[in-house]
Length: 294
Ligand SMILES: O=C(O)CCC(=O)C(=O)O
Image (cartoon, rainbow, N blue to C red; front, side):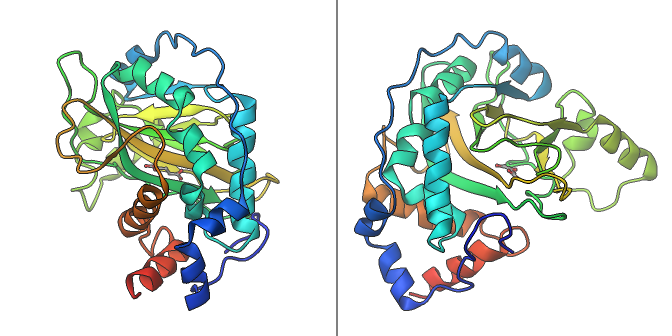
């Protein structure tokens, strides 16, 4: 499964690959770029209301076009050299953007100034061919504390590196106020009645997003990456991040401004361990197994 990303990712990395993976010089040589100074952070009026009411908010154009281009080229360089998409997380220029002022501007507009970025992230890459798909319907966490101002204590943030469309598996959500009595028991329910299934389907909302859009949701929101139709030419790439308000209860690792090499490598390994489940990320799962065996 690689259509849409150029070179095929090695099914299982050999010893030389694993050695190169752990060498920062590999990543310096693979991609470097000066990161442009960000533009002015917009006020992002109305985002908080949306998060409170619907459980998600969308900030189009949050990244400057030059920032989008760096992430896009960096991801391309990773895939063109036969690495899995998650290796984008090893590149320092990528983190200058993913932990930078454009993303933080949106997060602060949503949760206020006192937020921590958790040292956890994932790169979502959906090929353009028919049937390629993002992650199936899920909640990132079944229950997230709601603070006194009605906003969630934690946030998942999703950064569109390419356009995400109806044809290449854009994000879909079940808005929080649509049928909370169903979404709150999503993880624990094995069988739905026809009436419940109908209601869930009826309220689903597709969120096509242009490259550079930053989306954020309450981790308890029911959401998923769509299924590619095969009618669109372009694959879809996005990066998920996690933020938590102070006090950062339950978050064992968070990042400073821009993670250094050791921090990036640890984050990458942690991400493989947490997210590379064989049923949703078969390619990355084989890399996780190979890394764990070293
Ligand atoms: O991009 C995707 O397909 C899924 C993203 C997602 O579900 C997440 O980050 O929690």
